[in-house]
Structures are given as C-alpha cells and as structure tokens.
Image (cartoon, rainbow, N blue to C red):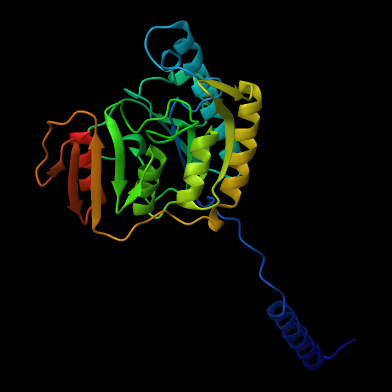
Length: 297
C-alpha cells in the first residue's frame, strides 16, 4: 500500500505528464458555422444562344422566340449548375436582352435568383453586380457591330456603329467586363458564337468559353442545345474553380468615349459632337461614361 506522501507525488507527476502531452497535441479544427460565401453573377443575352440565327428568334411574337426564350433559361440554368458544382453559395442571373423580360422565372434553375426587367441605371446588363461577387459569366453573347463572320453582330442597338473607350473598340461584353472590373470581379467564362469568344479573349486574355456556333454566310453551324448546355455547365464549373487565375478587366481613367452612330441628334450634358454621327465624352467615372453612351446611342 502506497503511503499518502508517495501517492500525492505520483498524482502530481501524472498530472504534469498529461499537461505536457496535451500541449504537444494539435488542437482539433472547429467546424465553421457558415462557409465563406461564393457569389457568381451570370449575364444572359440571346443572340449568342445555340441555334439562334435571325432577329425573329430573339424577339417579337414568333413561335421561334417562344422556343428560344426557353433555350435562354436552359443555358442560364446550365451556368447555374456549373457554378453550384464549383462551390457557389449564391448565383444571380441577369436577364440582359432587350427589355430584360425574356426568361420566365419558373424556367430557371430554382437555386438562382433572377434579376428581371429594365433598370434606369448605367450598369444595364450588369445591374445587380457589386464587389461581393467572385466571378462573372456571360451566356448568349454576340460580337460588336460590324464584325464579319458573326451572328447578329451589333452593339447595344442597331443605331451604334462603334463604341470605344480609350481607343479600344468594345463589344457589349467588353464594356460589361469593365463594369465588373470596377468592383474587382473578373469575367471567367463566355458562351456565344465563335466571333464573340475570340473578341473577348483578345480583350480579356485567355478567358474560358464555349463557341456554341459559327457563322457561315448568313447561316450557322452549331451545337445542339443539349450539347451546348452540357459544355456550358462543365465550362462554368471549370472557370469558377479557377477564378483566382483571372484578372478583372480595367483601364486607366479618365475614360474617353468615342461613340459613332448611324443617326445622331441626341444630347448629353458634357458630350460633344466631334463630327457628323460622332460623339465624344470624357470622365474619370466609368458609370458616367456609360450614362452618356446610353443617352446618345
């Protein structure tokens, strides 16, 4: 039987050993109550959708428009699915075509939020974007006005001949990428015809993307909608996972706009008409430049 003094010493020694052992043991990671948000913004136009070849496909009362507005929602939903597979915690889809009332809410992947309807602000197709987003995706996009071998190429509307900032002629995807860059958000993926994918890679670098069709004269040679949606889903997942490798698109202010139009006659405070059918406007604020563009186009 141990003496009382010896027992006390033994207990003290064991306690010291236990404390040393605990001190050398790595602490167990505590589970986070909420994962870090990963927000993805998807801007969806129509002219660059799989199968679209004419103006009646993307507006009006034709049966083809009713069909392609469903294709629009399906390609958008493919992007949502890809973003979700890459770990997105929130996806906002911006209906970016015409009056911005093309996708029917019930046709879109229910995990996404839909921003629908025209807005008065200068961000337009990028309405709803801010610095809380991690990546931007373009779906159904098209090349700028005057682009050869392109499907329904135009810039904003049929009156714009060319729109440039700081000497660079921009498609819609170009100035929308500049808006994203204001908030430090990179464009990581574009789907549309081959012409717009090539244009945006020239502007933004090696952005990921899928050319769902190529122009052949006034016709197209393209993927089936199902194949296009599969490629979009996989491409968006890949791009969102690799988002850290893409840089936001930016220019050094001030921003000097030159807008050429087929028909002029509009005015905007601070803008000048440098020649017939040509406006100039310069500002250190990109959104002010886009306000001028929207007023004069």
